[in-house]
Length: 249
Image (cartoon, rainbow, N blue to C red; front, side):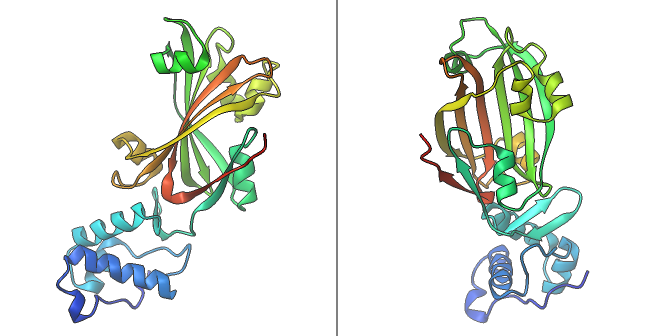
């Protein structure tokens, strides 16, 4: 791969830490179009040789720009210039697939983990369960054009959905998995949003540095009669989405 024609900043900026100079250089290349959206960056070694610096300095700058959403690391493929955040609509019936297709992205999903466990106090309270009740936990990595967008952790009552994870593995859709139990017409009744830093595992699954924030979306899905059927704790790569709140009643 041919490295873009970039160089370190002017003399007045050379008083800054070297990694920050590299960050500014790459940021400027993105802003001017020398590096275009979707373009792959040269490897750390090649960039380091081009700029005459150590590759660890390049890595720190890339991690910073990834955390800001200007670059994205695609596992097994390399580092690319990000296309910008996806508008992600939240409403009573909003779905991941609908949001990705509206953004012109190809949605996909991969099951990360699943297990049956005793509901924690938080999970039990949100699903209106009793102490000691069991839930099925299903953790899914959701992607748009093969880029990780969010980790969705679904908790469903084990007495109602004992083989939920197995059915999802065959059906590959939360909505259709519920439909296989005869559950249709559920709505998101409660949604809470908060920002924090990711855990080491979340950062690895999302392909982002731990310094980049995540947006945590906690929601409860209920039937028209009020029975809670799904507690969803989703962790978004914050730099990859722009949340739009739909007032759909």
